[in-house]
Length: 379
Image (cartoon, rainbow, N blue to C red; front, top):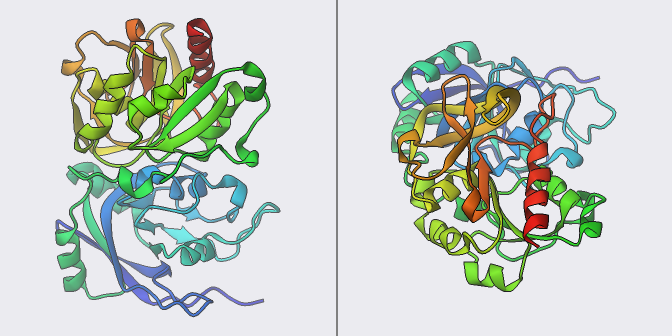
């Protein structure tokens, strides 16, 4: 049996000059197909506190433009499986871990995490002091970074040249280019019997969201830039606004189409979809200091005063002093960030967190049933 992989030294360098030493992993190494190693990559560094689900995190399109640092020390233990992918490929810029597992152990595993990263050309660094890194990001905020086997000066220059996510349209990088129906593996019983139909805007939609939507309706996914008129011509019972990456204030062209649909059909938004719906209703957004990325955020549902343990992944939020006639339905108990909004007169509601995710509990799955009820009421 072969021993652990021999790894060259690598660095993670932040734009403020902080340096973290580690070893190369992923696409910083040569691939078995003969593909050469990358020397450097850049992105916005963020940390994720999930204890498991690393494959779902890496394949979440909402991480486009970002380098993911996992706070849990051992990553890759159970390998990766095609059934757990949230999109066709990873869109993140890189992965940073304390210790990557060389030999995963799980009967479902099709390959190891590192071979998956190499195959998709995603670079990474292992051996990083992720506790120190997380403290640094918490104190200084999310910022641009560079990682690789290149020299420190070269990586620092690359980090300072990285534009980050502010003001950038990253949805264009992840959205589908043509309408499609979810494949059979994502179609769950129930939706085909309901008689309801949903058009889902793909701002970076996750497979697990499609699984939940197909429980309640027949679903068609459309590109992010699809005009509202074309969607309404399909006569859907509801419109879904998906999660996605980047700065919502950089997407006024998408907000305008959402405005044109409000009041015409029930609308449900998640994550970026929540931010775009709020913007379409007149609210504004702002960038969080280091974002919410993890599977254990406590959220209070204002209607019942119950607390939900939620999965989250966002770097921007809706400003509380810009809500106008919207009703706050959910609040983050860690920092009071708005986690849910509704506008009953327009049959529109949204949440900032991910009700489709299962970080252990499934506290928020009821929101899909509320969407079904709203569509049935309107039909």
